[in-house]
Image (cartoon, rainbow, N blue to C red; front, side, top):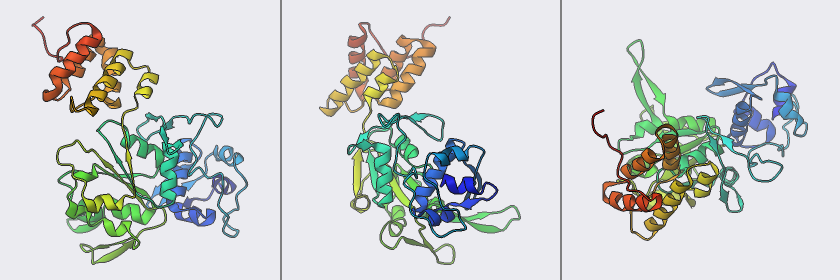
Length: 358
């Protein structure tokens, strides 16, 4: 793919054009292009449709793969160097961290004897929908963002409507109304990955509008827009996140049946240690997580809370960070958490609070 861009640097190509030449799905090609974009080895010059062209460093990427047939020639065979299912690694050893859109690094974890990012990309290639489930802060969204550079995200809640997914009429500058497609239609038309974050908070009636796009039809009907039929382009893929412990989250049979693979996601406390987070805090988190599994407490600090702990410790000191750890625990678990933290630190710890006037 980099070879095509580098061979004709003055030309721009859509995802669909490159997918047709390379023999890969639009989603796979889009993901690879976003990888090149993140490395500065391609430039995106349009969004509807997504259009890319070469940069001064595209030839560097092209040099690492086999020669690619230029656009003027016949359709190329699949390029084995296309980074759709391969995860960057250090000397074919442990996978290196992957940069997320927010600039943070994601550290791949093991899944089915593969790096999790690679496993998700392979499942997308096979069009097998995935549901990730686990407590908030365990890295579900981070993993999905790292796996799919062309991701569109829908933040689900009880107020999400069919219009939020498919689109609706909005008033334009001239006072008239025009129909704006929603994220589902955009993902279908552009062959992109669609994340339903907190999918189980969305009303089942709303989710029903999505199901025809996920089955063999791969189509939806936009009744609000003249009954228009939208057919999914190659690469369109749906993945969802579910937080079982969140109030109002209901995994219906209809939703569960649409996701052939369901993966539990827990906090990686080994990663927390590798990130040089306070060792006592990590041990406390492991202890609480063990008690959570036995039902002694209902909450345990996840990686997100541990990262925040270290930031607070760096600014206000470890004592304040431990006090905050107690304070963010749910009220019903706070006394138990305070007892665990007190025992681990060797000094009484209560929730972070203001003291006397200075």
